[in-house]
Length: 104
Image 1 (cartoon, one colour):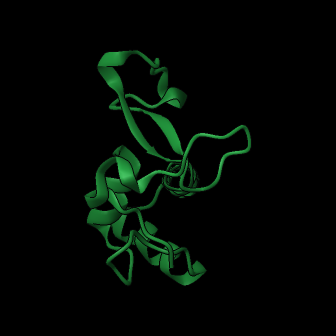
Image 2 (cartoon, rainbow, N blue to C red):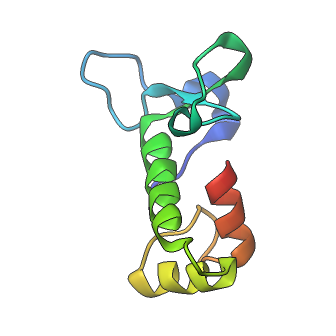
């Protein structure tokens, strides 16, 4: 499974092209997501990979749909049963991972 290579610094990003690759740089609204009203300003932007941002967005979308009436542990169980890949370096979703994915 592909991983983000943060330890390589700027060398971890593909060159910017008109047709971005999954490892091209992508601005990430942090700490307030765009979907929550965050704006892209120098004080709140971090650079990430297109693939990483898309993956994080997918996690948050699925968690948000499952959040109604379920505990974090129950959400983790559902994600594991659906085969949703967890963050790199882990094998299974946990309640703590669900919390971190949802708020990061």
